[in-house]
Amino acid sequence: MKISFHGAARTVTGSFFVVETDTVRFGVDCGLFQGKSSVKERNYQPFRVEPSDLDFLVLTHAHIDHSGLIPKLFVQGFKGPIYCTFATADLAAILLPDSAYIQEMEVERKNRKLTRAGKPLLTPIYTIEDAHRCLELFQPYGYDEIFKPAPDVEIRLRDAGHILGSSIVEAWVTENGQKTKLVFSGDLGNVRQRIIKDPTRIESAEYIILESTYGDRLHQANTTRMDRLLEAIEYTRRKGGNLIIPAFAVERTQDLIYDLNLLNKQGKLPKDQKVYIDSPLAIAATEVFKRSAEFYDNETRQLLMEGADPFRLPNLEYSRTREDSVALNESAGGNIIISASGMCDAGRIKHHLKHNLWRPDSTILFVGYQAIGTLGRRLLDGEKLVRIHGEQVAVKADIVQIDGYSAHADQAVIMAWLKRFTVRPKMIFLVHGEEQAQFTLAQLIADELGVPVSIPDWLDEFDLSSPQEEQSVIQPCEFNPEVFSKKRELEAEEAYLQFRLDMNRHFQSSLEAGQYDELIRSLNAARKVILG
Ligand SMILES: [Zn+2]
Ligand SMILES: [Zn+2]
Picture (cartoon, rainbow, N blue to C red):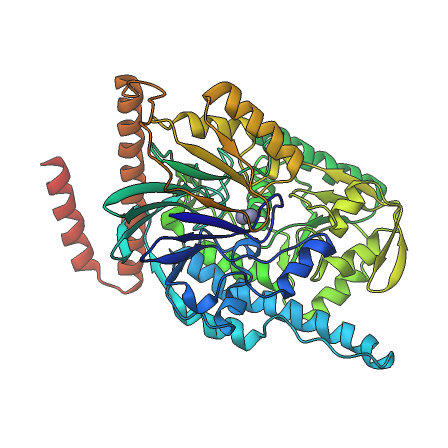
């Protein structure tokens, strides 16, 4: 069996790994390269694996750095199924056409210049139509189900706790009668993240393909990040300008609304504080969040039960049209504007930056990872003059960063997740990270776990069928009765909350439908079943 690394190899973007045996060939993720132009250039190069040779694809989550080249794969001949969770399929259905739109717009702008210069024109990597067509290949599964996409492969998706629908992929691949287990971490979530659950603990793997975005960093706690958010709001109000928050449309924007909601509930958010979500994508993504309550963590379910809507706020407005967005550009100050893209490379955020970067009374607040080469990273690195839409803009606004909003596991969370494996893996491949983070994490893993680590470079290939030595055991016995009973307690609590949530829904809809007799009968019957 061979594995090759077609992206996210010594970079954080372009995730794409290919596993190959004598009988099957499949991919995990197929993401867009973002950031530095030398990396982005790879989006235009031919795939190094023939798309029609792939039997199927597994998609860990909807983020564009994992899914953004799927339409290209489709256009170039891949017609196999794409396996992912239901929420991932829902989110991909809005993110992929949006990614195509951004590319079409970018090419159109560049082509206007090229036409004037009399040079050959560019074509987009794929079109909105391609993006819509490839959605037909999606075949969603629920978490934790084992399915068999090919006779020699079994797959199970586990909750990665990174964004809604994100998964860790467990893959059992049989070759010459020998079964080997690979685990692709996907993007591993942060613990105690808003709305969604914590990453699932996995117990065994022979090979782990592990993300390492924050392999050399530790995040702030949730409480600290809310204090810092409030600080930024109050500070910008005193100055009189706008607070501009570039945020990924999926998860980060909803996390921010959730925290603003909590601040509001605690009476800390000024009553007249206006908040705008200026991203059609974020608005569409929020709709997907609203109808995915089954993936929420207990805290969020509790909020719902109390009748709160974590995605609504008294002074929150969603600006849907271009006119709304332009009006916001002209606003004098006093607003919180949350807009995408998160790394400031595209979308409406660029307009808001153009109108606010030069204003000393405004603040730009970064809450997400900024890849090398992106406008966001350059602002964080302290550049004083940037170009936006061909215009020079002086940077006079305050540039602030809160890293507690990260949807990625930090070093401590990655290590804790690894330490749950009860059997020592043969090899850990570090992917999805910049070199500094990867080397630091590799050293730590070698020191603390004694597992061999490899940091593949772009297009590196490894043969995993070399002689199988015996696996050594890290902890002879992981079973701990205390941990076990705690787990059952949490499961019981979860079952109770789910029951209440379902009952609430049932009650509301029966009431609205006027089915009073039926409702009384079913409630009495349910009481009898439970209480005897
Ligand atoms: Zn991600
Ligand atoms: Zn990623």
